Length: 235
Image 1 (spheres, one colour):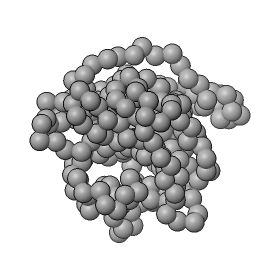
Image 2 (cartoon, one colour; image 1 turned 90 degrees about the horizontal axis):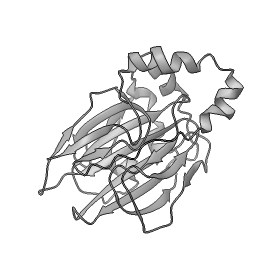
Image 3 (tube, one colour; image 1 turned 60 degrees about the horizontal axis):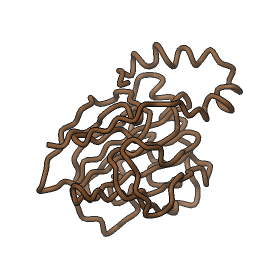
């Protein structure tokens, strides 16, 4: 369940760091623990285990994060230069110590497409992991957001007549995002839908709606778990 970054580092990470690096990276990293499936249609749950890097409302051309003076926008993250909606975006970083199975924040019809890297060279995400282990968040180490392999997952929720998105961002190694579901398949809330290996990031993107409002459930830089921790309440 949700913990402060300091508490997570002092408990779970401290225990895991006792493992040999080979066991941690080759065996423990690929774990897929059994978890209860919470169903609560008042909330969007976390799609990933990890640390909240940012959570904010932005316009399409506003900076989600500014890296060395360059703005990285929702259009960049989604790979869609025509996207024109204001959104609530929550970025979650998965470190070596996190479970890398992604889960459905809110049940709906799933479709997905791989996005090409904008640059010719993917970038490692190790600097952000080091920042987190030092209880810091440095936006200047997040330029992989625009460059690395990404998967755009689109969820349509019939009961809300609403479409939202989960973007998965991989480390410098390519072809490491593995969907579990078929295209246009209905998936339930907190069901496993994909795995993303090595250092990685998952962004939950909720377009603002005239039909309902959103309320954040977690504080910045909390450590959260997929399928267990609610991120957003629907009002």
